[in-house]
Amino acid sequence: MPAPLAHAATITVTTTADELNTNGQCSLREAITNANANSQAGSTDCSAGTGNDTITFGVSGTITLCSTLLIQDTAGLTITGPEGGITISGDNTVRVFSMHADTTLTLEKLTVANGKGGSKDGGGSEGLPVMGRIGVALSGCDRERNQTATSLHAQAG
Ligand SMILES: [Ca+2]
Ligand SMILES: [Ca+2]
Image: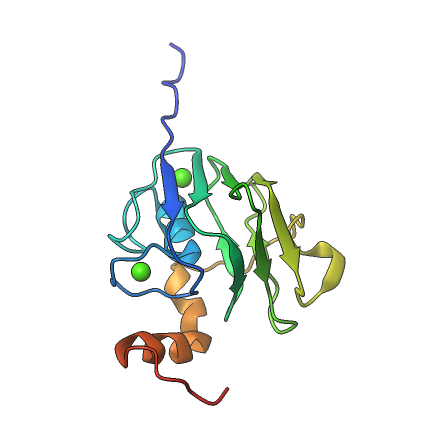
């Protein structure tokens, strides 16, 4: 009996902020978390993932990450940038993507910049230390959380 076709969702990112808050805006991090989990585990701001998902963008510009994005769904994931392109920056501090060994990541119309670790960013298939939940990687995101909670007043970096 053939395996049922894996359905796939399209999840649209609506903010260039790197955040994990339920704030009505779908961040790339939330979208990836939903795609990984095939649910809305990342945030209800984004559509739920289902199978081999595609992430698209309703925004363009640069997303500056505060921690590495973990790609863990063995169903695969495609990230397709908008017409104007989008840049995902590790800010010379973090790797941009970290991949589970059995995962396929396809990037289109998307620039990966300033990732720590250089050429392996974006295409690496190195083993990822086992992590139960994406949330454990977010300790560096307090600045973004605060920013949202205090309605965007400027903070020293
Ligand atoms: Ca959000
Ligand atoms: Ca998925």
